[in-house]
Amino acid sequence: MGMQATSKGNMPVVLLKEGGSETKGRDAQKNNIAAAKIIAEIVHTSLGPRGMDKMLVDSLGDVTITNDGATILKEIDVQHPAAKMLVEISKTTDNEVGDGTTSAVVLAGALLENAESLLDQDVHPTIIVDGYRKAAKKAKQFLESIADTISANDKTILNKIAKTSMQTKLVRKDSDLLADIIVKSVLAVVEKEGEKFDVDIDDIKVEKKAGGSIKDSMIIQGIVLDKEIVHGGMPRKISDAKIALINTALEINKTETDAKINISNPQQLKSFLDEENRMLKNMVDKVIGSGANVVLCQKGIDDMAQHYLAKAGIIAVRRIKESDLTKLAKATGARIVTNLDDLFEKDLGNAETVEERKIEEDKWVFVEGCKHPKSVTLLLRGGSQRVVDEVERSVHDAIMVVKDVIIDPTIVAGGGAPETYAAAKLRSWAKSLEGREQLAAEKFADALESIPLTLAESAGMDPIDTLTALRSRQLKGEKWTGIDVMKGKIANMKSSDIIEPLAVKLQIVSASSEAACMILRIDDVIATQKSAGPPPGAEGGMPGGMPGMGGMPGGMPGMGGMPDMGGMM
Image (cartoon, rainbow, N blue to C red; front, side, top):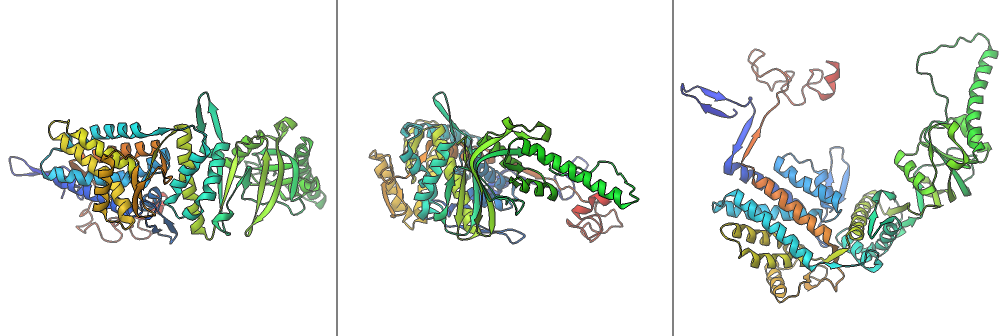
């Protein structure tokens, strides 16, 4: 039963519907913290270069193999409301800075776990939250204080940053080649505004195709369309292309209203068909008249129109995604035309070549050498579909971190070094706090160390020895000392070329501390049940769970309990 209280006459007062439930006070906190810790445990083994991958199988049997924190949590269908918050921080971190999704969740989990021990000592949640907030602010200041500023287009550093991001992924052995491609592609789309730089990630089109190996991935100065040329009689390659982008169909529009045409003799039928052909030819003539030799169309192209275009030696591609059409417009300088009467020579775009090439089984159209170089395509390859998918995720993260550094050119070393540094500094700062907030700030420092701890664990090092050694070297002032996971020892991460954007570190601290504080402030979880169908007992006292009563979540077929039957009832 739901929430109850007893009034004077010993009558129970029921506030929640049948099936509603409430968890209060310490139970609610314990439950929420436990759920969040489970989420952190799921991803914490996949942190760092020695992290393990997860295999996620959905209800259709589709398999995803990945160690990208955000992807893992996105694919798991999480029910618990507190756990959902951790999924959210991994999503926002992914959208904001693109990397550090696993770290953010691990840190949030550690913050909650440490808070739990304070709650057991009867420290009030509000005090913990205040202590955490202050500590998070301070930690960000400490991180900013050790960050180095670089020049935003320093290729070697950008390369190291892209490589560091990919060290933790499946593509590690090919990270040299990929980092090179990624940095080139990001620098190609950089726009300068005054002193600042800006990067629109959407300018980089990522196409993936299974087959070949990761080494076969390449950067193409232009746009790749995963479509083929519509007609066999068209040329396969055109140099000095003049491109018309059309987002209307090269077909005869069917009338909106039902129309009947009565045809009584073959002559009429012939003139009807001739008229249709004439209309199509008219359309194609408009295209030819504009001087275009490549037509890229968002909608369909009628067979007859294809014939006329092929006769004129024009390449045509149909059913192109709108997003690709927009990219093409940017790349070639063409204007997207909706009405063929509006198509003139000035609306055409230019490219050096448009060519159909065979990739694996499919034929794709490559538009290269565009006059506007700000559109590039990364063509990613890999041994199998699963591999290519993971390559794409890794490349996305790497593109994002390179972008982060170009927009905000400050960097720190990785390998848990900045976290350990901030933790050491926080501990000495915590002593200046009065009251119980001091305990919370110290717990925040402990939580920061969960990152180097987890790295050490996945590398098979002894976590306690590693952490004590790290602390002592940090206290001696070696601020770049972190864990070189690949060598399994403590080293100077800066000279090991493990470099990360400061923006990622700051995002991890803010996102995780905010999520932890939010979960800690909850002391009451009230769940209400929306009943599906008549209230239980209304139908002659049958329990609501019997088939056909609408009480079962799925309901029996035809009983109105099925989700898709809603419209028929």
